[in-house]
Amino acid sequence: MITSMQIPEKLVIASRESALAMWQARHIQSRLQALYPQTQVEILGMTTTGDQILDSPLAKIGGKGLFVKELEQALADGRADLAVHSMKDVPMHLPDGFAMAAIGEREDPRDAFVSNNYPNLAALPAGSVVGTSSLRRQSQLQSRFPHLQIESLRGNLQTRLRKLDEGQYAAIILAAAGLKRLGLEARIADLINTEDSIPAVGQGALGIEINATRTDLIAVLAPLNHAKTASCVEAERGMSRALAGSCTVPLGAYAERQGDEIHIKGFVASVDGREMLRETLVGSAQDPEALGQQLAQKLVARGADRLLAALAG
Image (tube, rainbow, N blue to C red; front, side, top):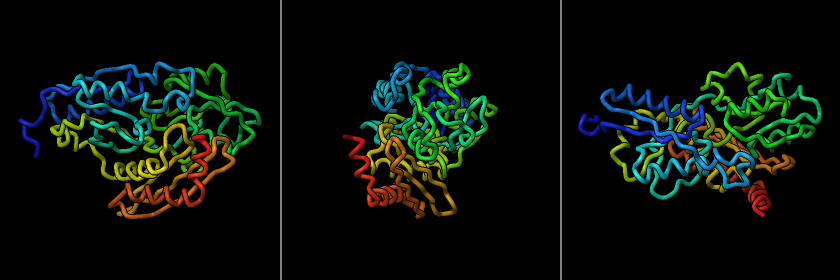
């Protein structure tokens, strides 16, 4: 039981300043205020390097860690007590001195097909330009629809939708979770099932990161942790970590809890989608990390290490 002596008088949440990131921070803020009405909960909005550099694909400028390092700096120097992230943006290895205190319940993990003129991917004519910032999506799209032209799409959610509306793309692929959280579900023309587009590791889940020295926050944040989601995300991250996954590697993983078991599927591919290695695994939810590692080993046995070496080279 948490006593009043252990509950902070004030908590500061570090967040990116995009509309979606601020929605996520306010969501956590409202959860904390409901749990601890006597605590003042504030949001520290920040612009990250990943938000500033919009003219290059993430894979070429340093990866998804560019969305979190400024927030981690705020945790390190005491300007913030916790940071809220989309788990799909969190690098597979947290820097020393930081810890993930809670993972919230997952929103829809699927990718969304967004277009003003076409109902789904299959309806796109040859040569249609599809926008995505993700090598994971690009490889799976190219594997299924080699006649489509995939082009990079950066910027926050509103910027991406504006570029679509301006006619720069016939369609764009976005995470369904972000659209739903911002009340933009009507923009979704089609939801792509997780068999056809295996999601990014952690897609749809929110993570709460803290300075590892702030052990006082572990119990305070514990009610925000959704155990089933956390175990699935841990399994996915276990697979990606074992394969040295980052946004420079086209890979994805998606785990679901069924009772005491986790069902997980994952893939590694060449960027052009011509080589696509997929595996599935069912195992105990007791050690999600180990299950993810086992899935990685199955992929390595199929040649994933060769694919990854070619990408690194």
